[in-house]
Image (cartoon, rainbow, N blue to C red; front, side, top):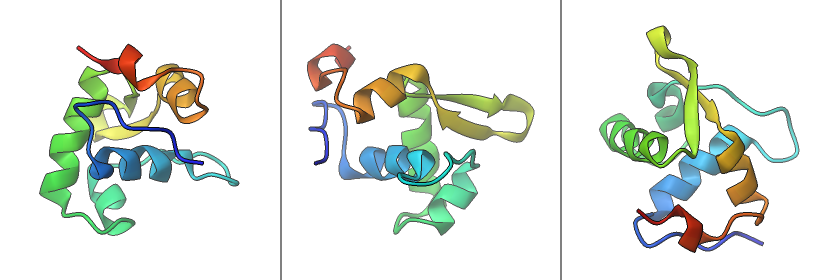
Length: 90
């Protein structure tokens, strides 16, 4: 079952988090361009949402110089249902 979205989140945010999680397989570390290639969203859209997700602590840099992202501990907790959407509000 999918976790509910926080008020500020959109389905794009969930798609990014789930793509990084790569459920059932090893987690992925990806650039915004690679996330876009593996979702139905444009690279510009992904870049905007990645920034927002990073600001909220759900993802973090794996390699900042190459703009490669991974799920943060908070992101793991959220996708596992251990952190409520209300806890992610500003």
